[in-house]
Length: 217
Image (cartoon, rainbow, N blue to C red; front, side, top):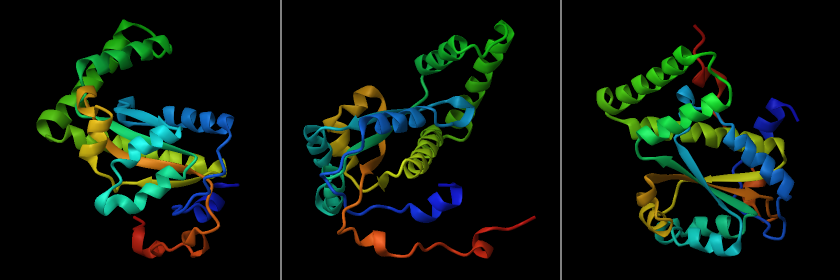
């Protein structure tokens, strides 16, 4: 499938066939694509919880109650679900970890290049934390870039997907002890194969026309 075919055919799945599982090799390929997702200055301000077992799905479903209860079946009947989390703040230890990995990966020709990368990241973090005052928002924007890449990668692999923003953040944070880890829950992504009862699979795709969303300068 090419880019346009995937964009035209993928959709938000509303019901999953719980008997159909993503082959493990294919799922690991999807996770690797997620790991390689781009982010501003390669800041990677995220952590992902991979939900594969029925027990793990039940834990996540605790946050799919009340006004969010309609989302519970998507997680419980999916093959896999991923919880995308974002760091509350960009700590010095995270920056050190990134810089060390850059060095291991061979990205610096000398110490001057390494220092330049360090200074660049520190400059961005200082700007968004102190001048803009919204470093958490900036960080979460990067997490949603990773979500977008994963949605497209799933389409490439013929895997159905459902991004889920409707869940009780407090419950899921308590269940996974996210506060102690310095994380906030950003979005869930259910993955698997659609049920024949999925009404959304039969509906035509609807998007605004090109002249409504593009301004050519």
